[in-house]
Image 1 (cartoon, rainbow over the protein chains, first blue to last red):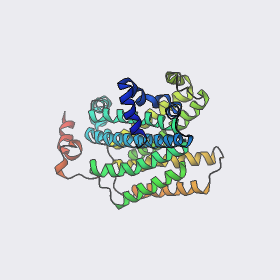
Image 2 (cartoon, helix red, strand yellow):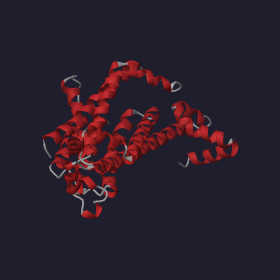
Image 3 (cartoon, each protein chain N blue to C red):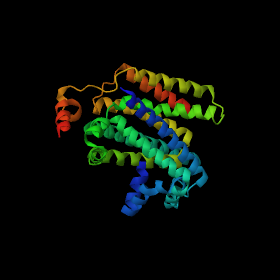
Image 4 (cartoon, chains in turn green, red):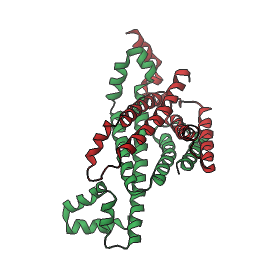
Amino acid sequence: MKVLLPRLRHLSRSGGLPCAVSFILSPLRGYGAVAKASQQDAATNSSHISILYTWAAILAIVLFSVVGDVLLSHAMKQVGDVGDLRRRAGIATVIARTLSNPNFLFAVASMAAAFFSLLFALSWGDVSLVAPAAASLTFIANAVAAKIFLHERVDRRRWIAAGLVAAGVALLAG
Amino acid sequence: MNFRKYLVLAGVTVFAVAGDSMLSHGMKQVGSISIHRLSSVIFAVANPWVAIGILFLLAFFATYTNALSWADLTYVMPATALGYVLLALVARFVLHEHISPLRWIGIVLITAGVGFVAGGPALTEHPLGEAGEIPEKSHPVVVASGAER
């Protein structure tokens, strides 16, 4: 952030809004844009920035996935047990009730955002860093978020499980 | 937990792995997509592997939402992680790839984690104070009136 802030301030002073927008959209052009933005910097500085970008994108993946998972879980608890509901009211009711749930729609939007963050992260960083880091951080963050927002009883058993799974995923995908 | 629910959890695991693998295989056939012509990603759907992979991922999403309708998020999550184990085992025994000792440790850790969660209850029983948020679960009366209609 320390590197980015002065640059953003410089952009907003010299180029105004269009320039700032192009800076924000620069991830869309991938790694090339990052390299271009740091033309005057030393080569080491540019690799620092790409590491920074990668981790920012990883955090974005984790954030959007957690929001998506929590909202989806909340939405489906509101809908109720899908199996029971289908037996009572038919599959059409299940689909209608799920798709008309605003939390479900926000969850899908958030998961889509997580997917695009993943694409950005992969364009800056190695898949061997991005995939395990994002997956294992998501496991831990999901456990925390489920406890806080969904009031799930995350007992010691589930904490241990989340930790083991996160470590395992990091080892397996790394 | 009954047989149907275990079947749904198995579906979450298998569909995610199958979808991801097919998508990955298909996208390697399609080749890398230029960052300047992102719209060309649409034509990747023409690849049969990509198309079937997307179908499997839709099936994954359906089973995942199904599972979340009767189980806690912290209960379903480890089930999805079991997919990584499945993927590694397929790589080892079907594709005959080498798996490093570190990855075997990862497999053991994930399996242990899943075992930990599977031994506990699937759903947190919420007290009446939160009944308004989860009407179907907390009010059997609603279920009964629904059945009468």
